[in-house]
Length: 231
Image (cartoon, rainbow, N blue to C red; front, side, top):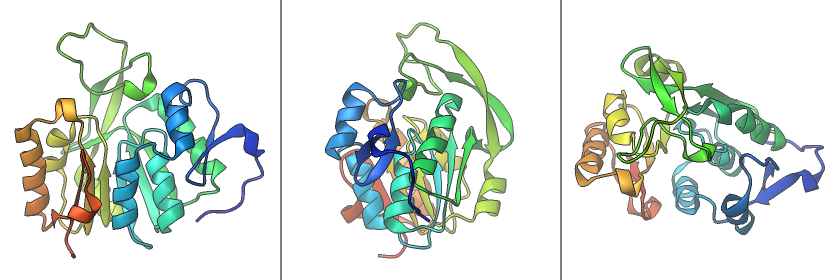
């Protein structure tokens, strides 16, 4: 899936052998430092490297900077990654990351998944990487945009994923039980500690276990939980 890129190397921040184009809105401060040190989304990356296999079809919910989709495509030679990212402002940058690493068979769609087609509010924060579907209890109204909800059954039927990767900033307990999870070989869930209560985590675990997945300790670390059907 990866080919050589002709873009000059000083245009990039390089992390784990992956190219991330310099962009003042996304690659700055702590994010730039963690990318350069190779510790950006370290637990998520380790879970993917221990779990994802060549030929897997990955459904990614919450693409962020495109870090995890690029990692799985380059380091594990998956058949395809289908990403759904709720923040519309991140989509163009994710495309540049994939292009900078010569990746094909990558799709990026704005929105989230749900039981039926709809639209929901998405709240935009000054740091675009912190934007989300929810407002904090003590937070004033933020600028917002409407984003699409895609029919989960239709997406799963079309994509036929073998691996689910979810990093939805605290929305996983609402989202995951609504998904048709049967048929997955593995799932990697990045919980958000300040928004993931015990009940929320149990709800996610229960939905994944009902789909035939079991906790996989070698792929799990900290807030990142890995479940597999075949170990």
